[in-house]
Picture 1 (cartoon, one colour):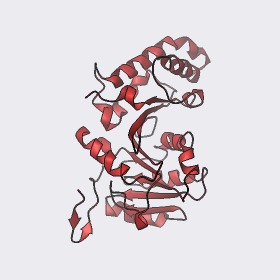
Picture 2 (tube, rainbow, N blue to C red; picture 1 turned 135 degrees about the vertical axis):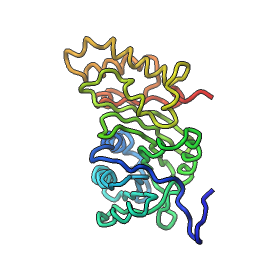
Picture 3 (cartoon, rainbow, N blue to C red; picture 1 turned 30 degrees about the horizontal axis):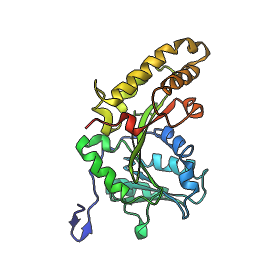
Amino acid sequence: MIRAVSGRVRPVGTITRGTTNPNRLRRCDRWLAGPQAWRLRHSPTRPIVVDLGYGSSPVTAVELHGRIRRVRRDVDVVGIEIDPDRVTAAKPLEREGLAFRRGGFEIPLRDGARPTVVRAFNVLRQYEEAQVPDAWARVQERLAPGGLLIDGTCDEIGRRATWVAVDATGPVSLTISLRLAGLERPSDVAERLPKALVHRNVAGERIHAFLADLDQAWARSAPHSSWGARQRFLAAAADVGQRWPLRDGRARWRLGEITVAWEAVAPRP
């Protein structure tokens, strides 16, 4: 329930640590401007993309604005933060199509507007796993038709990232995106899994089985290393695709990115 304080609606959520860096979310932005670009292009109204919990610096929202405006020029990006000081600090960077507001999971947009995309990175990681479904549901209620919530986690400079795509029906996919240079094994990303999965990487859970299979495919594909890490990952992904319901193809694998249907890796009851 949204609580009112002194006659005003109190933002839903808690203030995050706020750490961020330039280009930290580039992998997710690339996915949004790539296979998910249709959501922006097909929106019958001016689409709104929310950077929820952007942190102590608004750099990720500014970068997002620049990247997705190449997809559709009239898209609006709104950075939303609970911490009022962070919002105040970001205000001087506002421009056409880029704004900052105070708020949380209630997604307070002007005139009750509904977002086409809500990107929440490194936000729910600081919550309890049991709180994730309610947070997802609150954002789902606010999405425009065909809208998407992206709940993700990444390392400090964006070399390893994962995210769950959640639409009006629920979670639909998990994406893993890796910097291939210097990669020892794909499961090194495990500590950066979204909150819904990070504690489920144990024997008997589907996500554990998927990462283990991906590691084995990576090991079997070692001979392809003669042509570089990209060719090795392409071979490993093709191998895994024989057993798992992947939702992408070679064009994404070449980027060190692989997406699997949520039901294949979802936590067991």
